[in-house]
Length: 88
Image (tube, rainbow, N blue to C red; front, side):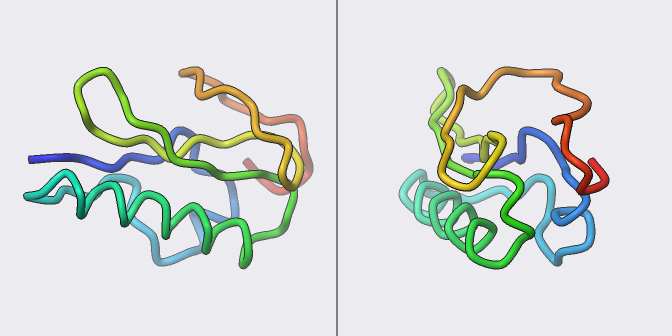
């Protein structure tokens, strides 16, 4: 089983229909979902964050959150607030 999780649930994510964790039988399906979800979040959410998918050491995926549209960033753990006014 392969899992896709969200690094940090910002306000836009909480209002969306996305799940914080989703499990797939095949790694390719998890990979495809994580990239598709990040792309949709970047297009449809408030543009105060940038979402991108990364593979973890245990071959799962995490959708990471950076500040600002297209700013990238690293996928650290435990950030409780991003410093924007979006409600995260």
